[in-house]
Length: 145
Image 1 (spheres, one colour):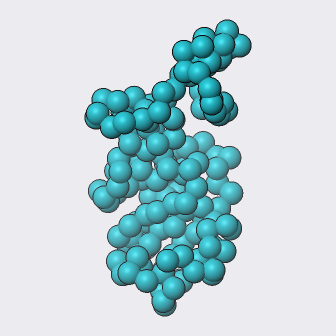
Image 2 (image 1 turned 90 degrees about the vertical axis):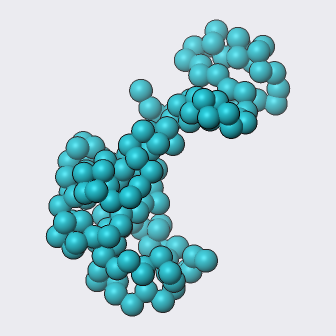
């Protein structure tokens, strides 16, 4: 369960580099907040710089795990885990998680049921997708290239 104090941290910060392996046993009873480095407002920096900062801090603390609650940090965190030899979803899975079309392609390849979807970039694409998929329809913007 996420406590109110942990929810407040989630609201404020983006990446946690965790030194204590027992951190995930009980978020409410974690006794060493100084063992966590919280990064915030780093999403405007180049990804490679963010990865380097995460790696540097993780090495400084001898981190056993890295986690994030912010989707902007999923890929940098995965890359940092890979460099550090820490377990994680992996870079490709992180990229798939950030891009709904890649995610659905991965689902389809694995035989996992998923909703019908189409990537649209023009009004004509949208009309064709509407014709093919029908309604109800959800149109979701993306900021990915």
